[in-house]
Image (cartoon, rainbow, N blue to C red):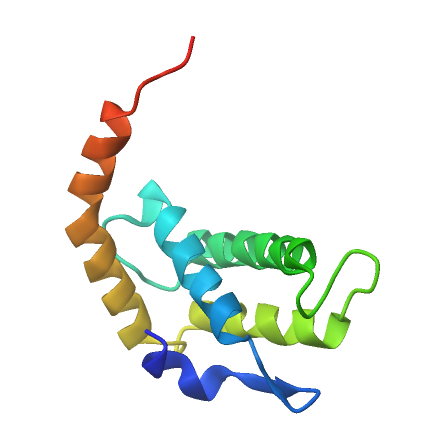
Length: 125
């Protein structure tokens, strides 16, 4: 997926935004939080735009918690804005059909295994 989005990165302070680690976090977040409402396919809809917006809010929080290029004490707003823009570009109609198809196929392939292991996890009482 990283290759699919290479051209969507920005440069902030002569460094790529997002960093590789932050980009991996974005992909892990998209895979781990994929809404059931979008499980049947990906089309640019209000549901997709809303989901991507929520992911952007989470990513800013995660960037600040990581304290790598931003933090709560010293927010790097240009970097955060560039990363959120990177995420938002996924929801545009022309956005990245190839990216969404790849993510959708991966989610569909891994969903049965992920759901079955989630049900096997012991519950604490």
